Image (cartoon, rainbow, N blue to C red; front, side, top):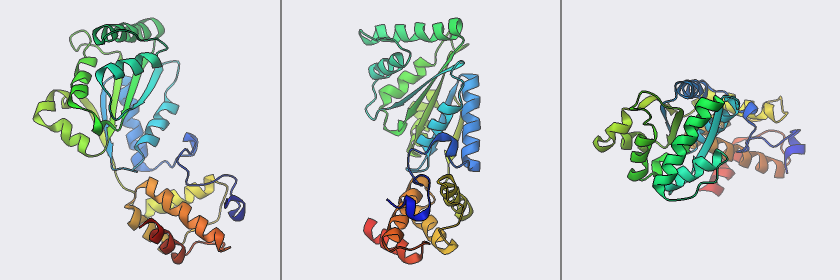
Length: 265
């Protein structure tokens, strides 16, 4: 709606931004480096962050960076994930038609992993998003999923991604066996003012706009109200652009943001 008015070639601050246009913050770069390491080592990783911190975007970026000739990447987001559904979804991603009871699916899964690794030279990477919603039965199942040849070898990497509470859950005494298997963990922190400013300007530039539209005082307020979470920064910026467009403004001001915040309150 407002793309032509501001001279955008595409709408900025959208959720499904192409991975090559994602803002490469120091936090994002560090998290990605750790995930690539875990994929190479074929172990277990834990990524946490508050809602809107960019966890799902990070997983999209990881998928785009893994060589499809060397990795089979599977993304699972199911708030009611059960062991049976886990095996069903994983086997389906391998191009198989999983049928049968849980024990049969487990056996098929293990054979398929080994076949991919030993005969096709591929490591399976399974990323489970929103993992803070997993029931204890599914978390315990992951312990056995990682067991190959008495812990001496594993042909897959597993990435658990969720809100901060996931870390607390895994560190609980009854989950200690899983926690000890975590090779690396990382928490996606909030963007500070300078990072928020760079993030907003990056979004504008990626949309074809090379001039600043958001003054520093507005950016400071956006950072404060969004708590530095990229998803909420996007929401506030889209709202400001729409409000300014309806008033035929060329730049964003504090009144635009105030009206957006009122509408969202």
